[in-house]
Length: 637
Ligand code: 0RA
Image (cartoon, rainbow, N blue to C red; front, side):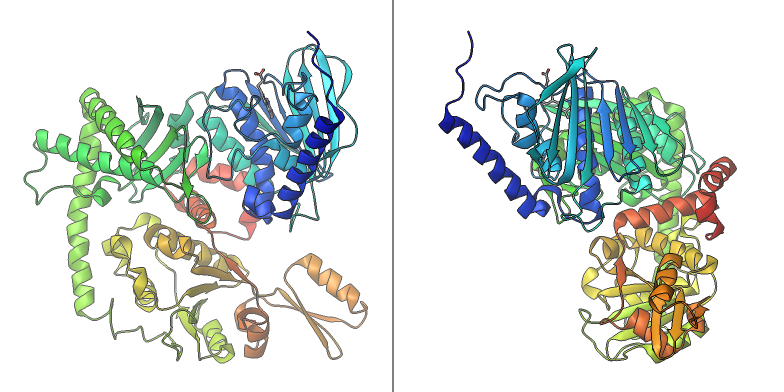
């Protein structure tokens, strides 16, 4: 039976629907991809790759390639089934064109089993199309190569065949629309990280990555899945047993995978994913995992006679000391919550994960008595150290150092007592501290100069950290406490600004401070209270004209604009070389400065860096320095 040709009315209706859909996306891109900054931009690539990963999950795809083009484009190719090209029964056009221009979740050609509602993922490739200056799709299917091109989401011609082709697959190539995005520059490292992550989460796939602008091509394939992910996260540490424990179970329609391994450090690293989407703000799956861990380890320790009574019970912090874990679950209808949709909200998931981890971890401990012994001794030591830390804290508190009146002597506080308007500048060294004090607005800006090296928190337990003067001064000034006892209501400044030199020592201090916040006061970061100041690198002057530049390119451009000749250029080697007025004008005055807000990802990266560069393991450090030779020359930790 040949299908009815579309009536004029039907045809018009479908075209109108396409245009309406397009303009909705282009009017409010944030509703579909979260934002139009760099984060939203990268979402375009993730959206297409997620579609290819759906083919992997359907068992139909083994290879994905991602290429960042020197023309600013991105190309994503897979050997999946290919987007269907037959005529769409409702629109009387090739399904391909419909998928690329209108299709929403829930229709006949929507093949995803695991929905990602409430999130910013799974919005559909038509959204990528609508936000691209141009996009080209090539589909190998039914023995032919099918092609269509679009400009800002509108097809420039009907789908046509480019000839015979073998196999199946999809290639989508696009250039983001510069009229939509604040930046259209893809960041190599951001894309690379996500692809590597996906290759751990989907062990069946090989992902090829090429950045035509820079660097060698790479391929990611990790047959060991999330166990290998944990091993990779722990490369710079000394693991207490190997391989990681791997737990897998189903509860109802939820699929639950956990891999975990302890190292000889003191911190917890937990990466949690729902339907392949990273949830840095945690949620019910992480709560369930943690509850099960505490309960199961206590049960085992009690049965083995390692602890007695309630007084010796291990706390959550005890059992997570030195723990690296990856949780990957698949949920039918996930609900993502929070500003960046980075937290899982489904309440039923807590019980599902808790029950699965309780059962499978108990089994693991029974079957691996040597590993069980090692990890429990570690947790028991942590409990003993916790007791020592409590005593140390009490001592500090009695000395009036942690709370109340006893603000550190070095702090030049502001007059305002309203935290919402108050800012704390953390400055490296007394000399820069002096300049900052003169340059500040003392009404709402406080200065805390830090002298000497901040303790590496990767290598110290809380009790030792509290003996460090710089850290104590910091905690007291900020006011919220540290570790498990954080109370954000006591925050004394809503903006905490790290103001360090653009040199080796500055980078060092910044990395250490970010790691400290990440590890011991993460709420400050997730609630958006931590910032990096942006002091300029150069001051240019010609006659009475003055300009500041933050990069070498900006310096050259500004010099050109000033007319080139007779321009004096001063390079600031540190904040201490600026006058108070210059520092205020460029870096501190809210009317003129730019501050960078630190995200939890930034802080996690600082933490990784510190672990690699200061950790016990030599090989990862050597590899890292080799791979990042340029950046490391100005890091030198
Ligand atoms: C709709 C239906 C089917 C596959 C796809 C879309 C699909 C989309 C993309 C985007 C990038 N790569 C893709 N690969 C496939 C199912 C096809 C079938 O059942 O044969």
